[in-house]
Image (tube, one colour):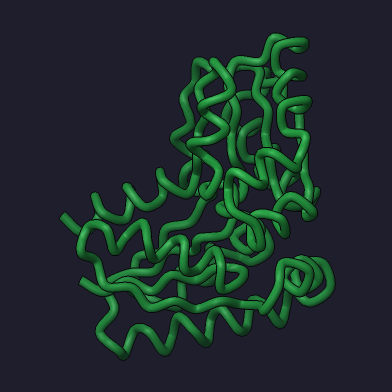
Length: 215
């Protein structure tokens, strides 16, 4: 089994591959940018170029024996036309946006954490289309994402004031936390350790979806 993992930078591409390789799935990493800043800029200033690059990458994969594609990046999936991409290939493509289609219906008040505001708005629109009564408290921080790339998970938790953010969940009586950036998968267990709320990590859920599709 061989899956292509397309993501924003080498970091999240490697993180996505590691989740699949634990189950014996061969992975081919394809990062779209060198840094989070570059990826962020592409999503705001060159979506047409990003779309073309993605389409060319997926078309090449189809002729190289791959069985599927995992787009392991919320902001990347939010910036391109996934319907158009899927129409140009027979390969199954799984993205974080697919995860939100199956989010638990019982949650009405959530904290949504993303890398940038564009992604936050895209995911919010998807969730509200499913549940117009959902109340979403949004938080986006490219700075946090950069720290995750360059620091150990424990150091990120020590340096970044996530405890203050999570205190907000208690003040607002929120019911769950949704990690809308795959970089956050690195600190998923650490976040779960300091909150009583359920934490939904799109990265690990996506990896499970890929594994299920191959069995």
